Length: 399
Image 1 (spheres, one colour):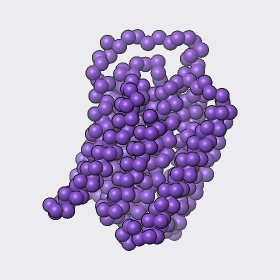
Image 2: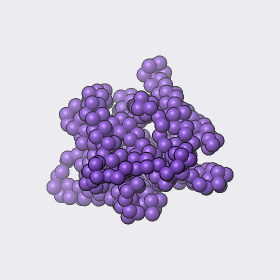
Image 3: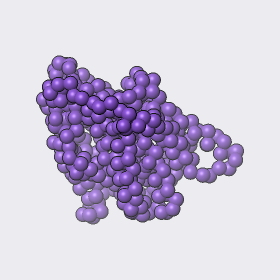
Image 4: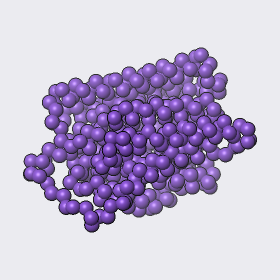
């Protein structure tokens, strides 16, 4: 059920991304991508991977864990307001209302992420499916309706931002049941045996390491969009970010439909060799799906199914397919460090990889290297792919 719902959610989000390509200009998509990415950065940093802790630390009742994670995330989110404002200023967008949109997107998306983890532990199969499917369906339906209605009403408002926000609001609503049970009404949770403590997935990382890992990931994800906006303009950013949005859904689906579910289920009982083979097939299958999506985008451009103004996407197809395909491999194994008490080493490895990626990303600015957008994305994607494959091999060898 989780895999099917994640696939439906993925298909809907791809449709939403294709809708952007068909009905909106690169300028509009570029500005939306910058604001939504800043909101994503804000949300990611505020969460500090609390959604993973909610799944991995199963010694705590789900309602209590969700309430604690939400309160801590909100406090962090409020404290991050100046950093988000700085990101908006650096992107050269108008501070108002871009910062307000980023705030709304960040906090509603944060609630949705926590809701997905909460329903994995405390919800029914149908609830687990609905929390994944309904938000992207709502966003896509709202965007399409706004375009169709707006054509007759001469509507020029922020359609993409409104659609995304409404989808996140629907997702955030699934966190409400976590607050319907008081903390003091939960029974005490006792460990069954000492052995179960060692076989149960856990997140033993310090708060500092979790925050550092989250900060580095969020900064890099946001920097990609912001740097592209600053170096190459909104149109190039629209070409790159729209395709990245389409291809980037696959690693996210693998993580949600496999890694998070594996953590929620608890200890691993399957034969290790069989389990590793399954993970490799899962990652390679997802990589093949990314390649198929890239081929579909190339076909759409070649057959002129998209407006000529989108032909600037061509140079981005191969590098982004390689990068996001490698991310699928990594996502398939991303639960392994938590099952093998290696979460701290995993965070340090991810931080190191992000540092290398940042050097390549900022090289044209800091080192004034004469790279155009095509050369820049090819170099960045190649370095990122090598690092992700190396990380995957390391996770596969964990015992």
